Length: 161
Image (cartoon, rainbow, N blue to C red):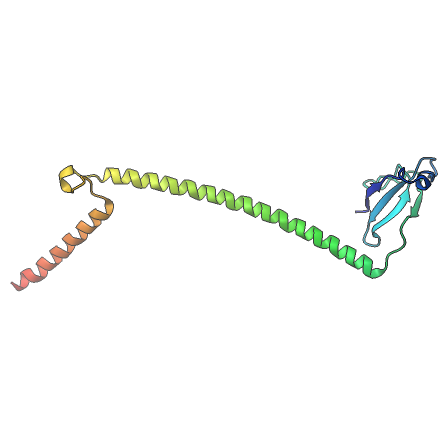
């Protein structure tokens, strides 16, 4: 990444009077290279940072050169910013995935509840079998367990009698 920020030179009359080799007013651009992060320079209006086309090749630094520690701090901050942006994007994707999983789980729970209700209706017995007229699955298991215990006890005590 070379340069992306272009500042207007028309706000200052001394800047606007400066012309490049093409005869047009200069533009003030910010460099984002590792060697000159955030440093501004004047260049031809036809300079295109994405294609590296430099127009008439005019170039002059606007800012003084930075100390090495300034470059290191700015570059580290830029790297941290990129990492945070990547982490944020990954968290957004993970959040969307979790939301989708929650939706799927909710649908599965609703489906299981419907199956449970349908299964209880199929297990209904005549109204004279209970005081409410219906056996639930739990009631049927309890009755079955009691019957098994009774049969086992009858066999055990029936032999000894």
